[in-house]
Amino acid sequence: MPELPEVETIRCGLEPHVAGRKITDVIVRNRSLRWPVQSDLARMLRGQVIRSVERRAKYLVLRCESGSIILHLGMAGRLRILPVATDAGKHDHVDIILDNSTCLRFCDPRRFGALLWSAGDPLQHPLLCVCGPEPLSAAFTGDCLYERSRGRRISIKQFIMDHKVVSGVGNIYASEALFLAGIHPLAAAGTLSRQRCRRLAAAVKKTLQKAIAAGGTTLRDFLGATGDPGYFQLKLRVYGRSGEPCYVCGRKIRGTRSGQRSTFYCPQCQR
DNA sequence: AATCGCGCCTGACGGC
DNA sequence: TGCCGTCAGGCGCGAT
Image 1 (cartoon, helix red, strand yellow):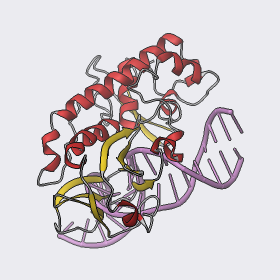
Image 2 (cartoon, rainbow, N blue to C red):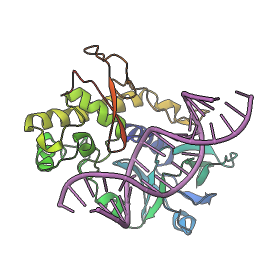
Image 3 (tube, rainbow, N blue to C red):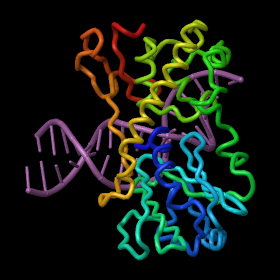
Image 4 (tube, rainbow, N blue to C red):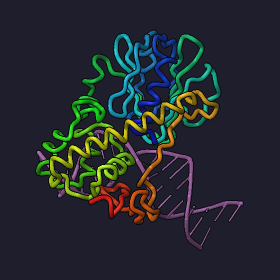
């Protein structure tokens, strides 16, 4: 499941393969994604030169001359660079064919992903313009977390997963960051002190940075035979460890739900 | 305005 | 072994 660090890793791996390349053709095999692939996608993309690959929240933005491709990998989306005419499987939705006889293939078995064409400024696209600050940017601080959370009764975990508050913090990293900050995931967002908000913002940044750094080490696998884009193996301290001992205090990690999401925490270390 | 919960989709996994 | 039910997950959206 690509979260922000994976998307950033993919962005890094992808850019050298596509930046500066011209799109010569587009094959759409299956339009059904979160939003149906627009019928004139091929017409819009043909002849475009990809200028850069950027990331906003968990979206990839391939900036072209007269617009941008906005990609979201959803739950199970994959991107691969392959020789043109490589046999396509059941879930290979779209091939973007480049001028060096390779193609960028988008595969998404669960169809939670998206591939959109945005004319004009992609950051003004309805999906992106509502996103809160990038968690790794200077704009995301404990102080803004504090101020925005006043009066909010939802759990702090749901709060930091709200992409209008901070964009791109997914379920796994929310649990991990809260552990690092020593904050109980079910605490009401509005009750956290400024001090704890600062600790949490720092923990979010640290968790994501470590994950991105780990991702970088496996980047070479981007073109691997399996098509595995090199998701890093971050050592998770609480996520999925229900019943196992906390690495810090030894108490059993607990699993619970917060807003329909599986949530993990240490009852000793997180208050 | 804030919150809740549904729907989308299919692979993986557990129980029988 | 195979069948079947359940769950996971991001995220927009409608309902409350």
